[in-house]
Image (cartoon, rainbow, N blue to C red; front, side, top):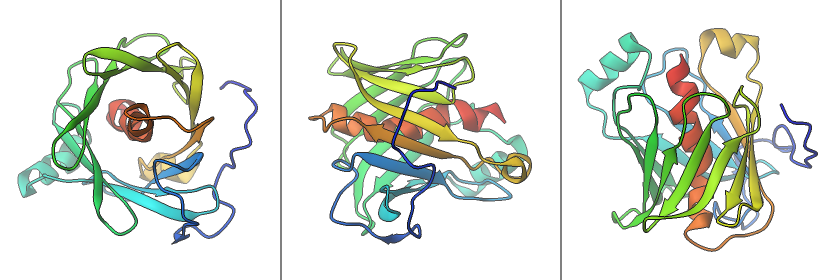
Length: 218
C-alpha cells in the first residue's frame, strides 16, 4: 500500500452511530464506510460515518427476492447478478441509487438520484494490473478512480484534469473477519469539496469499489 501521508483515522474516534455534527454525505471531508458484519452474507449493507463516528447514512441492497437470497448464500457471489444499492441519509431518506449490472469481467455502476434522474456512471477500464475506473457524466469523463497498487487496497480519485481530489483506503479487516465474513471498511478522504456531479460520484465510489472487486473476489 502507498505510504501517502493521511490524517484520516483508521476508525472513528467516538462511538460509531452517534449523531453527526451537522455534516452530510456530500459535505463531510472524511467518510468512513463500514460493511455490516455477517456470518452469512445475504445482502450488502453499509453504514457511513464522519471522522468522529457520527452517522451520515447507510447503503442497503434492495430488490432481492427470496430466490435471489438463496442463490447468494449458495453461490457466495454477486458476480452474475445485478446489485441495486440505495444510499440513505440518517433519517432513512434515499439520496442516491447505485445499480451495478451483472458483469463478466469488468464492472460498471450507474449512479442515479432517488427519482431515477441520472448522475453518472462508474466504469471499470481494466481487469489486470492496477485497477482503474472512469467516472462519466453525460458521456464525458469527469474523473478517474485508480488503484495505487496491484492489491487494490488504496485508490486515488482524480478530476477531469487528473488532479487528485480524494483518496479511498481499505482498512484491514482482521483474521477473524477474513475467515468468517466479507465485511470491510473504507476511509474516503476528500481533499476539497467538489461540485456536482463529482461530489455524488465520490460518495458512490467506495461502495462501487467494494461491490465491483472485493465482494466478488470471494
